Image (cartoon, one colour):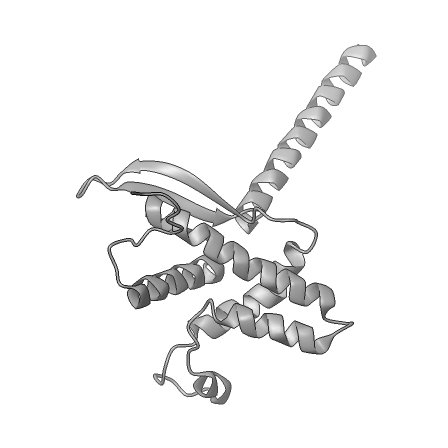
Length: 179
């Protein structure tokens, strides 16, 4: 029976599944647009995984000034959600020796993202269904972080268009009054 099964196995072993989720989380956080395209079941499994990591970074940011040990504890817990990489190579500037994407994801998570979501109680991600893939008919989805840079640019563009439209309307009405 299906009852009380917490997560999908995604047709992978535990180690492979955890590695997949870590890679997807790293890609989501480090991508410029803060969105990735994947299959719907993977997106649904990734959502709580990423939200837990963001919550840990928020908690660390909140207690940073009062309790440095607790903040460090939260940082170490969040580090388990990403591949460790080779920190020595990242610090020394050596190339080709290990991965550093997990380190970059942690820096961004505890820098920009924890500050952005500090007052948000949850719901940091959004899943948008795309339809089905041509080759294997798999359901595709976009998973993205809310309040991402693309959204902010579009909101600014909309507000600028509204402001310019109001300006044009005011100019028309004032010119009509003058005539």
